Length: 208
Length: 208
Length: 208
Image 1 (cartoon, each protein chain N blue to C red):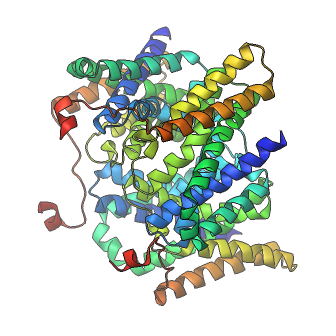
Image 2 (cartoon, rainbow over the protein chains, first blue to last red; image 1 turned 90 degrees about the vertical axis):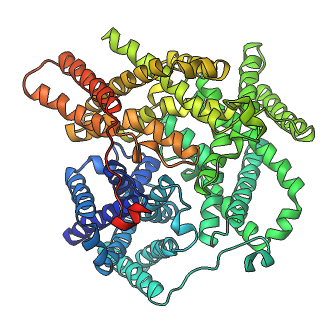
Image 3 (tube, rainbow over the protein chains, first blue to last red; image 1 turned 90 degrees about the horizontal axis):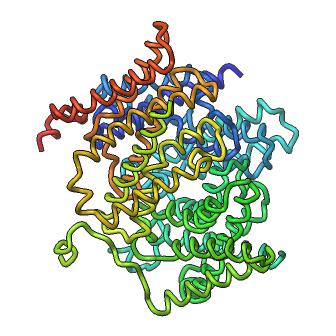
């Protein structure tokens, strides 16, 4: 699956860029912004690998990821205005990254021998946790807890993957179908501005 | 120790409920609140297992925990008002959970072959760290750093456990005695509203 | 390298003190302040060991570190005013600690068999991540993301280490040279109040 590898790198690159931009928005210095870019890009996969017991963690196995991340960080710092104008292209690659990370995380979990239900959770973890760490280090409430709903899309994508396998679909076809369904769902969600209602204890409080 | 297993599940259930309620109070959407419920329930044991080198981590070994957590999350979201009215029962099970988690964490650490002093720390970690992660993700200062004092009770409980073993008491008796002493201590602490004084650099500052 | 071991202990002691003082400044109770002191002292090495796959993590291998940390915590709580008056001595040992932690982290990474570029990152991680966790738990933006620039000094120190090894310098000499260069750089940086410019998206925004 060479295409998958390419999209994994592209997703990593875009995650590094978006993380670095978050750091710049918080007025970090260039080390701080780079650190946020780095943890955003590797955070999800790192937590997954720690929980599953892979060591050293994934990004220490292939130095290409490090250079891709470094490239994303440098781009974001040097060309921040131009990069922000490309927000649509960035968003597209970010979405592709989310889909690819989910499926790769899911497949890596199966390699570790865990049951499908854990693989689904680890797939979601792979694409979501980097952003959670980014927001926590920036001293903000993680975006996906209130606004973004792609984490749920990743979980449903994982479910679809095992459904397809159960129906006798081959591994690579299930992977690609899952990735495409995650990508299309997220694009539709953003297009129609869907989000889950926030919860609250008290209805009246909600209207304040 | 089937009773211990039952109380471990009950504690996990209550931790998931209390975590989810924290997320609801912060007006997260249902994914965000569920995520907080989940990490509150598994956080302490996960960090313990990572530090000791158990992998995959505990909650991936027995799918029953996952269903129990899911049940707690669904209860908290669907019946939040009713659940909050049961606050006394919740508090009781939360306290039982703290005691059980401490002793189970302590025993798991001994299995890993670490010295008693680390087992005591890991026992406390098992019951405390879930709440620390919950509060950090909710962008708040962890409750146990300022108000709750049960972490210290867990440490003292761990000390008692090894004291009893040293006195020749059998393992199961030491376990149950430790759990009961933690439960009773916490109930007394809450009953008499005990807390440690907060520290500060400057006495005058304290009176502001 | 017995001197290295001594300075590692001294650095751990000072990290525990500075962490505890941070907790006191946030008006934590004595458990909360102790917990911050503890994670500040062990956080960097713990994350490094988890990422590299060492288990149990370093501070569980030698109980002396635990007593040193406990000593630092007790000192900070009992003698907080006196300790703060020693801020210059503390700063000096903190700086020595940063240098020593970097080189020890780097050497431990090489033992795990990772490539030099990861060892450099892990060296920096060893001396920096404890402070990042401290600030995150105190609900603040990590200091090193905006003000302190020693993380970059640690990275450059790691680079120097491998440069020296590449030039045929012996291991111990490379270690000591790297530590000294990190210490001297940080002292010069503080002496001349150097810092990186903070980044921002918009120049005008910067002047608000």
